[in-house]
Length: 404
Image 1 (tube, one colour):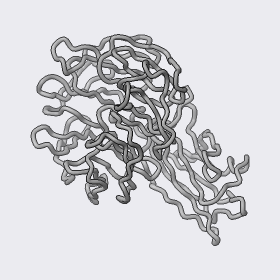
Image 2: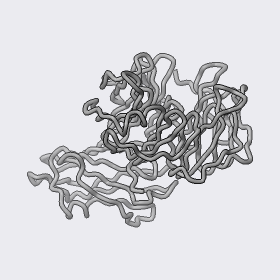
Image 3: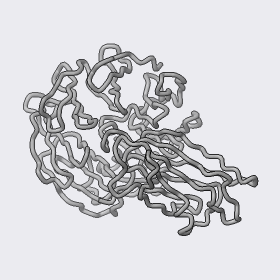
Image 4: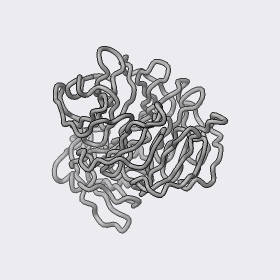
């Protein structure tokens, strides 16, 4: 499958100056997913040709050249660096190198090579954090989270806590110098700069969830006739439906090139760039609740015979084949890391860690309803003190975070 960035396309900028010195707005050593596409934006129009393609490289930790695709972006001053067809290797370190001999159309070039190091998450692509509400995310250096009185950012080491907006937020996405979120008060999409400039409302459409990927925001329309899946540009313009509205209405998940939508228990799959009216493909039936996509599999809810508000779990391949019910029942939320599944279940909100097929569950926490996984940490709001906590993936070192 030809995959685009699983979460975001990250941008950094290179500036041509009269002194031919390059200034790079770079966050070094970011932790990104294996299908990351990098966007390099220059201050002037670039002479894009095969020579330029040969001046942009990605090296692994042993300085081996990685086979990436270098293409012109959406403007004349942008270059996109796409990952290998099978993605980068999980857990490995890489360096993106831009050689100085790249010229603008007025013959200005960079005075120095520019290098940016990045790390690939040890986890496979995972949409669970956004499916679970997206109340916290990370760009590798900063955590962005929803507090009791607004949207904040804080460094991963717990320093530098800074309020970005008075609005409490869900479905937080960080990309291309912006923090996108759904305002809990009016259910509309806003964005704010990481320095607190803004926030700006970018659309009057009420939404249930958003995924920001590349140049588009994909969302579940919450007002007007139907609750159909749509997309708009990241500035709020160009809104359009995806697929046939009476098929692609309801809860959905975005995973790379494809959208999966649960409409009344029937799951349909469609290309993310499909036109309005496209019917897609039906892949699953009798599904209830959320759709989680992890490591080439769909994990989906089925009816719980014990609780109306909870769900049991099934899984299938991404095309709906090999569907099977797992022995995982009465769930609130699910998440994934490495070779393990994590889920909160039962009336006591017990947190379990299990194999990806649901076998060998181990209790690692209690009183945990919703939770998020970032790197090797589990973040959650404790039901007893209504505060953010974090712990290791094995449940050890559970501690209160002094966010606010």
